[in-house]
Each structure stands twice: as C-alpha cells, then as structure tokens.
Length: 212
Image 1 (cartoon, helix red, strand yellow):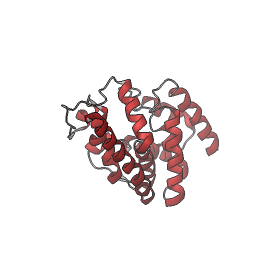
Image 2 (cartoon, rainbow, N blue to C red):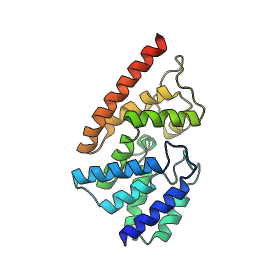
Image 3 (tube, rainbow, N blue to C red):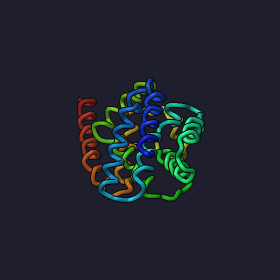
C-alpha cells in the first residue's frame, strides 16, 4: 500500500513541477529524496515512509513556485491520498518547518523526520549543486550576479528574507554559508563540510577574477 502511495505521489509531483525552473524541479526532489533516505540509512531515526513522502512533497506549495497558495495543493493531495491522519499531520508539519525562512519565525520542535528531510534539502542548496541552483534561480528572477556596492543583509524576519532582491553572490553570505552550522544530524553535518569548503573555494576564485 505504501509503495502505491509513493508512486502516486511521484506522478503528482512530477506533473506539478513540470515547468518549474530547474533549481526546484523534479530532479531537485529526486536528489533530496535520495539524500534523505541516505541520512535515514545512517541515522535510523524516524519513519522512512514519512521521510520519503515529505521529501517528495516539500516544494509543492513553496512560495517560490506557487505564490500565496497556502498549502491548498498539499492539503488536497493528502486528503485524497489514503494516508492516515496522524501521518498526514506529520508530513504537513515537516513541510511547514523545513525552509530556511522558517528560522526567522517562532521556535519549533525538531522531530527525527523533520531533521532528516531538512538536512537533505539544505545539502542540495550547498556545494557544486547549490552553486548551480543559486545562479539558476537568481537568473530566473533577473537578480544581479554580483554588485560590489551592495552588502549582504542580516535579515530579521521572514518578510525581509522572502522579499529580498539581493545579488546571487550576496545570497551565499546571507544563507548558503550558514547552512553547514544548521545541520541537525551527524550524517548531515559530515556531508555538509565538503560542500561548504567547495563554496568557499568558489567564492575566493570568483572574487579574485572579479578584481583582477
């Protein structure tokens, strides 16, 4: 039964993300699911079905993809999915708290499934893949690659963060370089180290080329 639900979820997510920019498309979902299940295989914490489902669905109502949707698509899908109510609640909870923007809001309980999927999503935002995603998304919004006169912002609220038009290079300092120290699991922290160093090397090379 659970595999049937996962297959139906795959079809739903693929259809919804068909025309989304490639930083948040089906391949992003595939990478996050794979990393989440890898972390679970090492940590053995939480329910693997919940982890896989939350990884598959985590971007369905993301404001970057469906502005102002307020979980309508997610709630509609879960209501028709055949998933038990308690499992639905846990999947919603993970998706409602997975994003970096949620770090500006009230504190929330870290459950193993959230920790696992959140680490997987954050890992896909850093390293070589994260660099590619950052510039792809920035380009889709028409953001500057870099503006030397524009300093990184220390955001104080979710609204400040989500409305920012800061350059893509600034985004590294505003978010991406912070993610290593925000990992929840031992496996996530270990995987983040190499990816973090890669970004540091990239930024050093970028600045050398910019100023040469």
